Length: 483
Image (cartoon, rainbow, N blue to C red; front, top):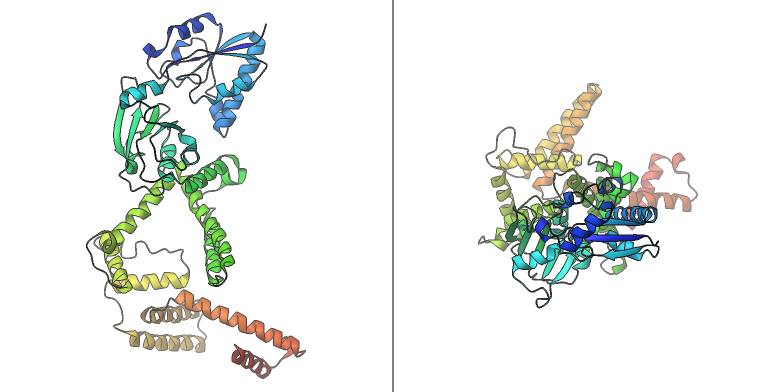
């Protein structure tokens, strides 16, 4: 006897949607299996073996469905005939059934059933053929919807991260594009919610009976960022190293990648387009760090990459009233002034606890000190011009000299030296020069000159470690003149 698997569908959700032929097959076949018990009519398959546990054992849906198909095929060879029940219809979004059909050692019998599609068309009051509706799997939205404008029916929207991925995939969305959420179709708690693209992941708590209908998109879907987010999730689920990472463990990589972006920018050559490649690569590495942190938070149920994108989008709109509002700004200085005023307004009334809110303590010391000084200046604590800053440097250098002359303890000398540096940063702020950039430029200049000194010493057969201070100064001055 040929091994046979009879596949039946349990309809979209209500018991009345299951046809008579399906009920007969359930009654007739002794050995029964069901893909999941998370379906309103799964209780009708008495004594069925469920594959719910497979979803916990595997890292991807493809692995789950492959495992289910293997077990069903083995059971069919053991018992001769088995029944396999799936939600909806056997051929609508049922990958495990597709794997069964590919196996030549078993005879697969399909009994037609009503799917959620039939109820969806009824609720939407549309003819899917005449309107050329394309059906999309929510897990593969970015890839399958690439180049599409709609209408689209998006299934498998069972979790907020799926909805967030869909939302993110439409990079050019304005936010008011219409979306219809179809939830628990055919059941007593059915919801049909008309909302906007901006809110599609905020209306309900989705589950395996949630679908989206997208009537029209202003522009086709461009799925590059969504593909990257999907890759980030895959690595987080399947790579041992990625699984172990936390927000804290990734900090060092975030800082390293940021500095590497800076290096790539400094090496850009306007006359050499090939230098763009390094910047593209380093920006990609930095972007992935953002994705990585968002994926970790998403798995924790805290926020998603869509929340990150929405946050910066909305903030930039608020901070650019001269573009999106009725405020006038004819120069870059006016833009900065407006930006700072809006930031201060967003922070609200300042007190001793909030005056330095938002100043990153982990920033490089020069940047950190400059931010603190700027925040204090917003409260009126500042020199009226650079003269006071010059005088303060002289005063602090004097205090440092006194501390060293009096052979003060190392902590006092360190503090006095810090005051000198802090005063220099204050002067740089008054001069409109970024202290971090200025020091980096000076460091690079020193590096290049000293490399020249080393080369010159080698050319002349000199051992630098044995040169007198006068000889070293002469080499330095010569290189300085050349550069």
